[in-house]
Image (cartoon, rainbow, N blue to C red; front, side, top):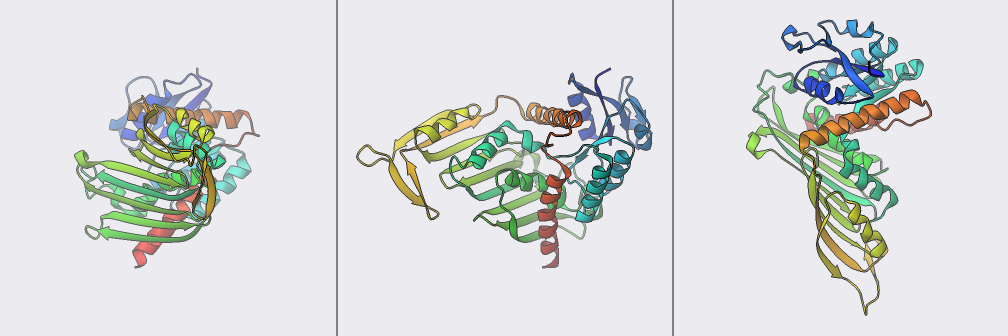
Length: 366
């Protein structure tokens, strides 16, 4: 038996993907599944039940993955931790801050490891750009723009996704991934949050917008729609630092481009970008010397402007799976070493949820 057994609550398409992904690990594997629909029972000898509580009674389940609709997360998470199970909660962590606070209180009481599936934090590109941002290699982040055009062909009007009592709406159910992406790149705190929306009918709120003004001169804009065709699905993420702009493509970023100003030392950092291909290099020197430029009220020393492209070698699904495996490994590290700081604790989910809740509230009261 593998050292860590995983139980999955909720076995739709995503639950099956989790199962396939984690069963390829040496450190862990899926030993139990719970789903209300008996037709979702998988092939093989993995334990299956329609009563999720049955997973909590099994000694061979150490980590419970909660892959159910958002309105169920609080109850499942609390009962699982009270039963001594470590938990991985699908985003959003819950539908209210009070719910998250109750989850945090139980986690603190039980000493269980509790993570939120903000898997973009484990994307190699985001990990690298976060290190650059932390060290201010190319200055501080001043603007983040996310545009997400998603299809709704697989989301009929009856789907729970459209029921805000279950999902919270697009900003809460979906955009928290990208709110958290911004949070990974900065320590700035939100000062002002505004929202907007368009509704197709009384049930389907299919276009949403959030604008977040942070301290440290950062503004983030988020636009998400679920109203198009699969062939038109597209996600673009643009990050503007003082000395660099990055454009990423894909809701799981796989490729993009960079334009950066710097010196030999800072520009050498670009070679660390996966699949890096330099497309241009232009000197910005005076008399062969490095130049001092002024941007956003600050002075910087630069010598060249460099442009380039980058791309991960793995496919979207392979990258997604690697992120999910990295998250389980991070949980195992925290389980085995109480001094280790979990990378995506409940507090991270709470911070993203706060922004989404405030934007949703503002959009719906206008």
